[in-house]
Length: 340
Image 1 (cartoon, rainbow, N blue to C red):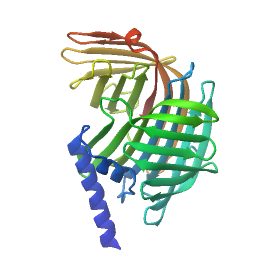
Image 2: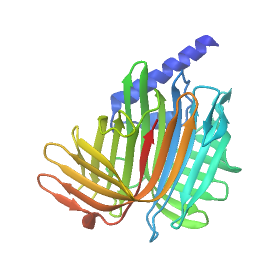
Image 3: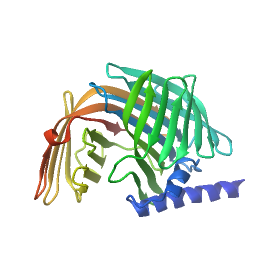
């Protein structure tokens, strides 16, 4: 038994190393499916997340939803002040946390926090949230997500410059690896038609919790921008891992910032993001219209504040182009503020 656990942990580290070595879109559908539909052996400080984000683009008001499956090394923790137990129940079956919310265009509707049993079958994750069965099924690029009679979504390949990604950081004995899938989505959420884009993500890591910012905004013309930074503290302006990019769908071009000078500032009603490198500058002003707070305590503490946002200002300048919000149309997205 000890041998098999050590072998499993070694495979977890090997996976993190492999994802870190890719750090881009050159990832196969086979590897994406393996990561999405696998339960990793977790050493101390080990964590595993599935994030499912959906951005609606047909309503006058922004609509979006987020679902989370989370497990970590250890026997239990407090999640939003509710005790959650972590147990392995057999091969590809475990007890962990499920949580979620929907912003329906008028208000944020909490789907609750559940200490659910999760079972991973062949290209299928079966779990439960607040009494509703939650199932993600399929393989890249086509998936289906059903949450009881609340949510029924069909996920299909869209017109994206990058529709998949694998990334990671590896500094033994610490590391994190993750895969991202960007797709179109169509279906029903809370009895209403939902059509837009989706971001499916699976993360596995062996590390302490830490402060960071992450965001992704999708615009009406299909372009998108994303950014990420690790911080040395909650209020620190020192970032030691940074990324900033813009996917210009109309010109079929990805604009990446090389080691950007990044500044992220809290505003009364949202956030301002500014970045530049040797020949590019970007400024985004985000207005938050709904927030959801996740508080984790036990074996380390972490707070995640999920902000549903719309861009009120966007200006990108390169040596040969200037792009503003007028060129892109309305946008919708998520900004994540995480700290110890």
